[in-house]
Length: 335
Image (cartoon, rainbow, N blue to C red; front, side, top):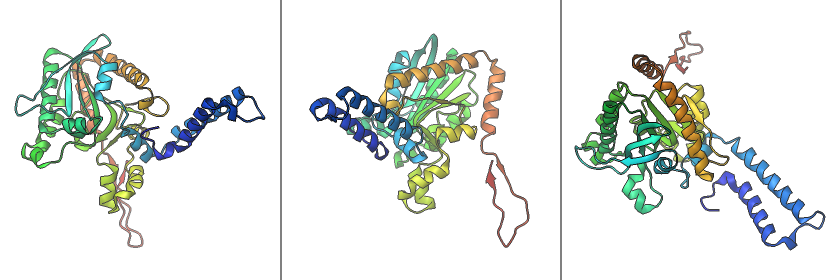
């Protein structure tokens, strides 16, 4: 099996044993029949798969979110949406292939869909800049959202990026300003906006298309202010501490839902979205349609008020005002 993750080894071993037995049935145990041995291994395989994937830690989910076979934005555009017509360019500088978007249909709804796109191989990753958009990518996204707002079309964004591109060219063309303008404008658009984190949700690069009425996240995706490796390098001065950082950052779908930073978790097929892209796309479509129908029924003023309140509520904390004891200064704690 290609792209095997460390925690998948027990599953791979059982699958190999099952495949070997089917190729060479004469090697089956003499104590039971061939069919019974096949059934026992299949049962053990299913139990092992469930035990592993129902108990993944934060770092293992990060690994799944980065899986090279995981469906990307263009895969969902093909399977979740219909009649997709891509639009190009920001009308200011250039076309950014790391950000894709255009008109599409979601069920019976006409929408504008925008998302970050990674590559499958070296050539495509160079074309897509590894899914890290430049300023022109965010300005293209803003141009499409303004079109959506002008024509009264809901906006759907699909987030899968390690972050905005941090290179010199991006800084020269004001990447921070491009993202900041998107944040300001997205809070004000009158059309419904739904964001879905389908893989990596990295820092401002994700937030630049992530201000929405509803924020969904796939079961094995993550959403974070910094990558686990970046956090580990800063706090532990060792990128090898990334698993520890992933736990501390609370970046998994379950943690984010408990913290109120996302609105719903979209379930994935057992083993991750890459194991059954069609099912993953169908699950996403079901959840998008549910939230879109709810948002479409809300008055514009009420929807904008709730969107504003949603993001103003992020980042609350409780400050410990008790006097210091034994020389220890009380610390602020997250709420």
